[in-house]
Length: 314
Image (cartoon, rainbow, N blue to C red):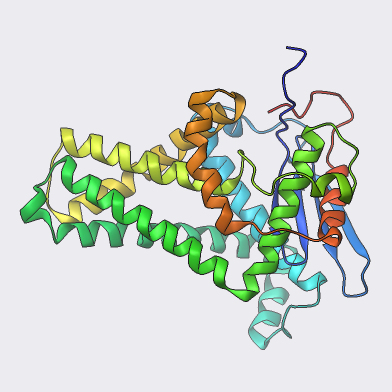
């Protein structure tokens, strides 16, 4: 359709004094250095060529692998940006020992550890705590859907509380400003306007295809899926319920990823309603950036825009 709004698959992540952008072929990282200049670097998004590995293209399977890959790459860029921005602390003896032993593989190993710790934290916050607390009411709610829905309510409260606490931390506030800059710059690009700080500043800091929205989708899908399983296989045993939820976690991520892609690809009353809660959550995770932040975001985005028109279509 000639009047269809442009939707790009390019996405990014806010860093320490910088932004990482991932395009279909290239990934870039732009960091504001202590002297005020902008340091940039690029690398191939996909190893071994311009085409993603089959595990990242097969529906439902791709959600798991893309999420893990995003976490590893994102953590590596976050640590690298902290070093470039001059906020990293003096390395300890243990840090030096790790770098000596692991060499160039250090960031890969740390990225893998970060993924494991991230999944463990998510399991504690959104599986163990909600399941444990909801079990206190099992005499009143029984072992079916009611117990799972109450568990889901606890998850939503934890998610909102976690985001609110993050938004109140001074150390995170500036990162969230760069998050807003990332959204505004991508919105400017999708509006097919010249990429300047002035043009980008006019756009909203909220974006429908944001990782924050994906996080809400994950929680929503987990509530629905766990309630369905509880209706078919009701059990009030807390340990069994926790194990079932852990086993279903890959399915939750896979379904959430596909739902997020579907909602991002279409623009109608239904998809706008489905994306509304995720958009609302972005009020916690984004702040209004200044022009210097928009400059960094623009530099990062320009480096990953493909030469072939439409190659980055969502």
